[in-house]
Length: 267
Image 1: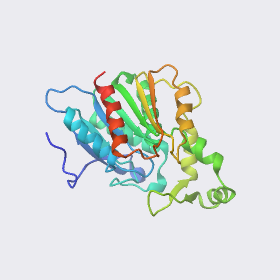
Image 2: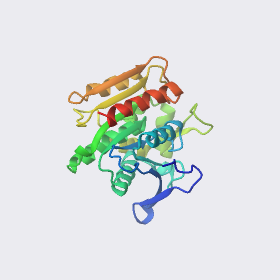
Image 3: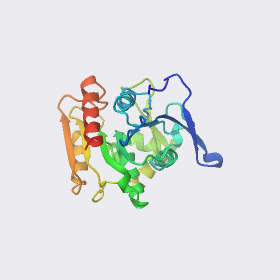
Image 4: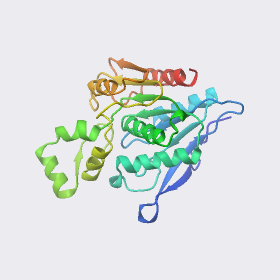
């Protein structure tokens, strides 16, 4: 079995209906014949896509081990359809559930990066509500940013940003990760309040491994420690990386991610 051609057309899944319909791009690597390992599901961060370093290396590792791998772009990201400014946690969660329902892996390990960690936690809650929590074999969170809109953005808004939200419905913020600024909409922030997870005990029913850089300028490592406090009933391991940034995409960081994944699929 070989990795899909990166230049090949991805598979597409339509989510929503009418004016809310959008095409979600997916890259699905099937499991090797005779292998029954949990599928590896990549959940990317805000404004990231499935062609990023960690996502591609995860698929490469899946090919080596014989596990299936599922990558996709949220609407408004990468090669998926939809408008980025229309995006909310609920919208991207709906798309994530639709992809999992479409591919329908029997068991899976969720790997969530930054905002993808928030979506992973909400996905697990939705699957547990369906009585399908047993499908989750493990959870690997990389610089997780649950509740980042209410915990990290809202408390730090400037007067100018609050005025922009009120007058224009969004504000912009420079980012070191590209030439275009980040855009945060009032819709995203309001929807984030409805999807908060750091307000009580979080039960995943699976082992959890958190990887967090201590030099992360976007999600302070104290946020990961706070998340850990909300996971008292789970088997949680946290790896603090003293010189790690937010992306954690260096070769040594990727190796840590893959080791954490191996700990989930071989347990």
